[in-house]
Image (cartoon, rainbow, N blue to C red; front, side, top):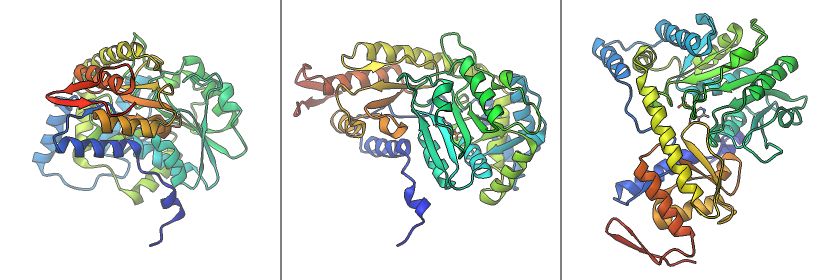
Length: 405
Ligand SMILES: Cc1ncc(COP(=O)(O)O)c(C=O)c1O
């Protein structure tokens, strides 16, 4: 059987693979602790549920416009005004089946084969594959100082005549780093001067800790004209815990939104009418659910940090936001895939190998679960990795005996 060159070059999604393995183990009754997840455990906001149900009850089942319903666009306009103090028009907005689709469609609208797309490493697993799907070349940039906080020089040094676009994701998956205002200002200025597209993937922007405020990229934009190459991406998945509802959006100049809408129209048409209603409900609804999620995640982050700081041999940078912690396990293994498999196999703890995010020797640990998941999960990992730990560990009434060194 033959497949396309592009099709063959696309990797299985590491995070979806972990979820599948975890689901199989759970279904078999295994005492799994899932520290690999990328979605909050909270239920959808009640306003989203009521809005979706009233749509279902109405029997409305028609296609929606390819760029989203008028009502959905109004909700996105309102969100952009509230969180970015930026007044945009319906023609500046496109709703999609998740932030992921907005990014994909934006890349398809702007990239030609061989174009290069720069993004700081470690990076979200899908950026490399999305760029490859366009026949273009992903260019991950590793901050020279070895931190998770890129400097403008790191980006500048990697720009070539093929560079078409830069993607910035802050708060960042997998590190939880919130890039500084200075860096955001610099990167916007740089892209405006060099006429590069800039995708701001803001999907985690409201999930920030320690009194930090979400950064508003529009504060630093000088070019507010229809020539602006800034593409702001956001959605309801993370802040409203609505990952499975699949609604995200892009805000950009009118011409680009028109081209993106054409691409989306032939790929998928507009997003589900029911889920747009749900997203509208969430955006206009009571917002305390977001704050409650944020507080839970901040508390979980603190517990995860305490556990990891007491884990000899593990180095970790305190995440500023999101629900991830990207910890350095090189002391135990230079091969993060093998390490993640070992932990799943021996102590039934699911993690995501750092190599999938472009940094070998690290593991991404999620704080989406319960406090018990975090403390017990790290306890099991310690037991498995520390050669000085006792020979036996009980998981419920199951006795594990160390048969490795
Ligand atoms: C950095 C980043 N961007 C975008 C997305 C996709 O969000 P959505 O579920 O809205 O497609 C994710 C999901 O994990 C993500 O981590």
